[in-house]
Amino acid sequence: MVERGTEGSFVIADVPGLIEGAAEGVGLGHRFLKHVQRTRLLLHLVAVLPEDAGDPIRRYEILRSELRRFDAALAKKPEIVVLTKIDACTDEAADEAERQLATRCGARVWRLSAVTGQGLKPLVDEIWRRLGEVGEEAV
Image (cartoon, rainbow, N blue to C red; front, side, top):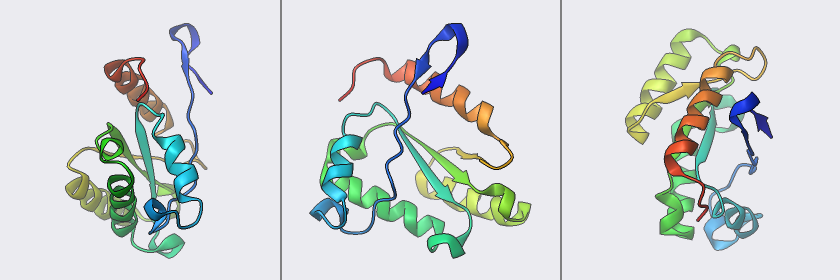
């Protein structure tokens, strides 16, 4: 639950990383994807460090592909792409990952460090703004 004082609040659901084949039920694919169908806005958290789980651009592409394969409407939901763990890399590495992700997703990429809190307030503000645009109805 994210509280915005007198403005209100919103709920963020953390859906663990989807793996390739999730749309066909690999892993917990269908169970997680059904939860994602009820959301109004997708927030994709992509770790900047390739050693964490491979290339961040490739992970983003796999996620988008699994969403499309499971439900075309799901892949059309508004999204915010966030580059995470920026405290654990150089500014140059974060800049390059941000540039590549922005090119791939065609939108601004936000930066976040859960450790330091860097980028958290602007990201929460953006989520709030985007939820206002989307409206109250869940699909």
